[in-house]
Image (cartoon, rainbow, N blue to C red; front, side, top):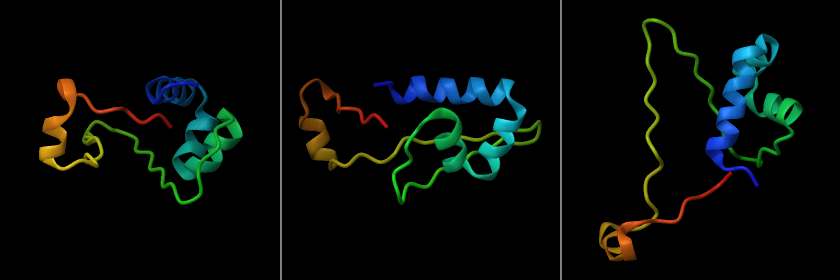
Length: 85
């Protein structure tokens, strides 16, 4: 199974080299990913694709932790398991 980082790298590479895919990805991300990348997008999952330009930069924050601060502090080594898509 590919990690989310590997999948993102593949999507970005394809969107950089295939302008038709890029356009479909911007217009209808779920169908573009399912049709072109063989990815099954879970029902109810929202996908937003943003295209940067010279006047806009996007910052993507990681999702909030499911643990409270005290629970997170008690995790051995301070690491939380990652979730793969």
